[in-house]
Every structure is written in structure tokens, then in C-alpha cells.
Image 1 (tube, one colour):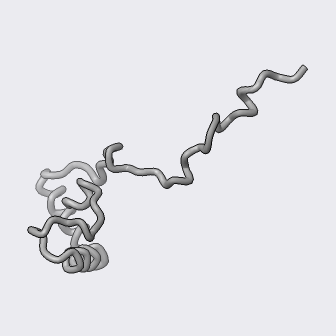
Image 2 (tube, one colour):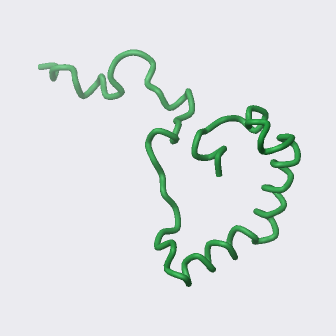
Amino acid sequence: MFKFRTGVPWRDLPERFGPWQTVHGRFARWAADGTFDRLLAAAQQRAEVDWLVALDSTIVRAHQHTAAKGGSRNEASDAPAAG
């Protein structure tokens, strides 16, 4: 969860977690075999978790192509009407 909380690439995980390839492999395996789903379901049954997903704008990034390149996206509607 450190990776998703901080947004670091897999290769930049702190050494205390072990080799990044091992951590990534375990994560991928657990995601594929439903381990995370079972952990979440168990936590929800114990009323330890009452949410499914939490997003924080500090970790949500837009792709570079989503940014408008210069000017308003609605330049035509910003211009005065021709008369």
C-alpha cells in the first residue's frame, strides 16, 4: 500500500520492502487470485472498513494530453458574437 499512498514507481520502493521485483510479483499475484478482495471482505465483515475505494487528489494524476494547450478550451464561446 506504500506504493499507492506515495505514488512512487515500483523501482523506487524503499529497501525495507525487499527487491521491487518480488514486491511487484506478489502484488500482481494477489490481485489476480483475489487475495485483496478477500482481505477487504474480511475487514468489512469486522466493520473495520466501510468503504471500497478512497481517492485523494494528491495521488490522482491526469495524462499530459488532458491539459489544454494554450488558451481556453472554449475559445469560440468566449469570443463576442459576430454581428
